[in-house]
Length: 369
Image (cartoon, rainbow, N blue to C red; front, side, top):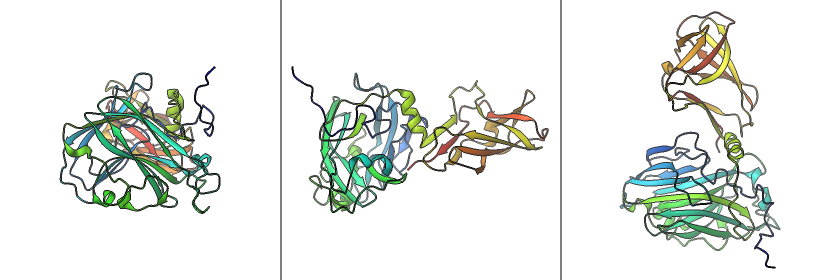
């Protein structure tokens, strides 16, 4: 009998993948965003995946696309180059990034005796053949390591094993909810990041010039596109089968960092945002329990103008005079919201604050790394 290969150093089968939303299934913000490339942030469609950009004239559209490899995921993240940039300035870059809390990385044992190898795997394709880089960057100790990988016009799985970083015992990840590690996919970079020697064989103190040496440019032509899904990071020297996770579990993990209420995409639906009561004649008060608990005290964001929001009271819909705003927060799970009305209502009566028949009306809570 032949035994299938196993990863003796890996965590149990369930939960071995440290990447959240690696199947690109959750997209709370949008499903497509155009004209990206001028700035960095959680600007694209896929939850937990951040775009890193710098000083480039190149632009792209990022979308959640139903073109994933069969048996892995129906969904993938697609980058489509819409503005080329062939005159690459020194500080330019284009990165896909996932950030990790230190307390979720303790299984690696990085920076101390007994530190373990880490294997990163993912599925990629493009419009043509390219060479790009995958980088692990330790923010706690400013250490990094990068490896090149090839992309063709067909889906293929990239498997990259990174050595253990035993170091001198002085560079473990912090055991807390702060940013400790980034997983980068580097698609474009200027000489600030490519003029040295690629640091690929062992972890080292970060030198910018050594991070992305030898990569091609995604921005070389408006014909270019790039697809990625099935992203996995696990302990050990072997890339195991991509861990399939039910959508409820993935969504709950994503909501620790970002959650959106409202914005159904259906203009005929008055999306309820929260319930409350009239604390004064023209101000509604309400609260929301954020479950699961978010990573830290979130900020609240809204969209549109005041008239995108309405208060429902006694079967009457009253357009608001201001967008919802935070009035306080007693814990990471409970937030209190105020909402000004457009006219006087009865103090003490119950109300609903909701979207005023507008597809963009929502409130969002952000505790991203």
